[in-house]
Length: 542
Image (cartoon, rainbow, N blue to C red; front, side, top):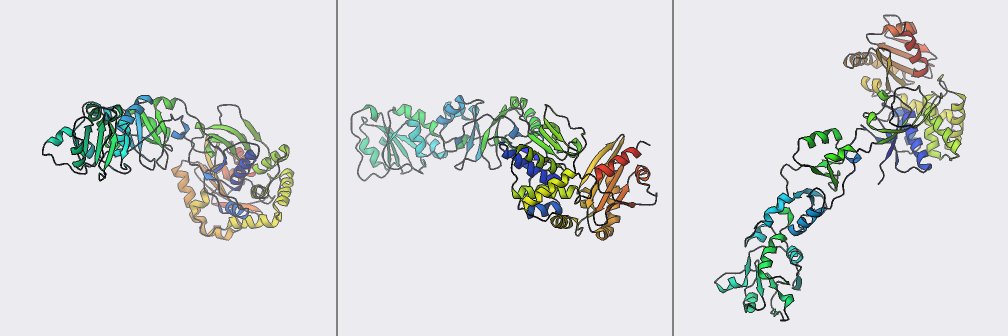
C-alpha cells in the first residue's frame, strides 16, 4: 500500500485553506496521483462547515503532527505463530527468521506475545514427564503433526491431552488408566489387546509403518489411534516438542511498538532495552512486522503539499521532518525550507482556489459540480464577496465560471455562507481569538493577528471586554509583543481593529489610535495581508 500524500492549509484553517486542500487533492487524483489525501490542521469553522454541507463534501482528515512514526519505517516482514502451534514448528521458524524472535497470535491473529530461542531451549534440554502434555494442554493435532502420524481411528479436532503418557510396559503393573491418558505400544510387544482394554483415550502405535502386521482395533473402542514410524524411545523424545508455544510465550516486560508511535519515543525505549528487535502492531492488534535499531537509520518522511501558506510557523507541527512536494499559495514567500527542489506556485490573487481553478483550465481538466462549489466558496470567503483589496479580476472571472458550474446564484449563496459563519452566538472569547490567528515576525517583534468576518457587530460588543482580557493573557503567556484582532463586517464595509500588547505603540502609529482607545473602526479595511500587515510593518521601523 502506498503511503498517503497529504494536502493541507495553515493552522486555524479558514474556508480557503480547507476548500483548497480538498480541491487540490481532487485535482491531483484526476492527474493520476494515487493516495492523495485532503487534510486540515484544526477545526472546521461555521462558514466552512456551511460550504461543505451545502455541496455535500466531507471534512478533511485532521493532522496533529508530521513527526516521523513507526509506520514511516521499513518494517521487516515476519511470520507469526498461533498459540497452539508446536514447539517443533517454533524452533524451525525461529532459526529461519531474522532476529530469532517470533510473534505469537491468538485464533483471531491478534498479537499476544513473543517467543525467542531462550524461551524454548528448556524443551530441548530434557523437558519431559508423564504429565507434561496435560499441564501444557497439548492438542491432539500437535501430537499428530510432530510425529507425522496417520489417524487410524477417531476425531482429533478440539481435543487436548488431559491425562498422563504411558508405555505399554507400564500396563503390566496394577496401573489405573483413564480415558484422559495416552498409551504408546508396538505391534510386536504382545500387549496390543491389553492396550485397548486399558481405556486410554489416545493410543499411539509405534513403528507400525515399518511393519506389515495389521493393527487390531476392537470395534467398541471409541478413542483415537495414531500410527507412526518412530520407535517408542523416539516418540517420547519428540512428544515434548508437541507442547503448544502459548505455554512458553514471554509476556513479562513485553516490548513492542504501535504503528502510530513516534520515532523520538521509540529511540528512547530502544536505547534502554536489552532487546535488539521488536514486533510492531497496528491499532487492531495485528502484527505488521519487526524493527530494530538499524531501522531508525532510514525514515520514509511523510510527503505533503502545502496550500494557502508557506510559513513554518503557520504549518503543521513537525513540518521540518516532512518532504514538501509542492506549494500552492497567494501570500508572500516566507521561511519554508525544503530538502529538494519542488513545484512552487505563488500568484498575487485573492484566493488559493483561484490558482487551483487556473491549473484546471491549463491542464484542460474538467470541473465537477461539488468541487467547483467549494472552490467558489473559498474565493467568496477570501475576497469578502469581492470587497477585499486583494481581489483581482481573475478571482472574479473564475468565481463567475465556478458559480455557473456549481449552479448557484453567486451573490445570494455568498451572503448565505458568510452570514452562516458570522453569528457569534455561543462563541467564547478564546474561540474568537484563535479561530483564524496568524503569527508574524516584524523584525525583533512577535505579532499575532486574528480575523473574524461577521455581520453581527452587536454580538461582538457583548463579548468585547472578555476578548480583550483573553488577548492580554495570550500576549503575556506566549510572550507576544502585539496582539491584534480584526472584526470585519462587509455590510458596514470595514473592520473594527482591537489591539493589545507591550508594543501597542506600533498600531497607534500605524492607524492613529489614541492611547485610551482599545479598538478603532477602519473603513474599507478588509485584508489582513494587504491592509494591516504592511502598515504595521512600516510603523514598527519608525
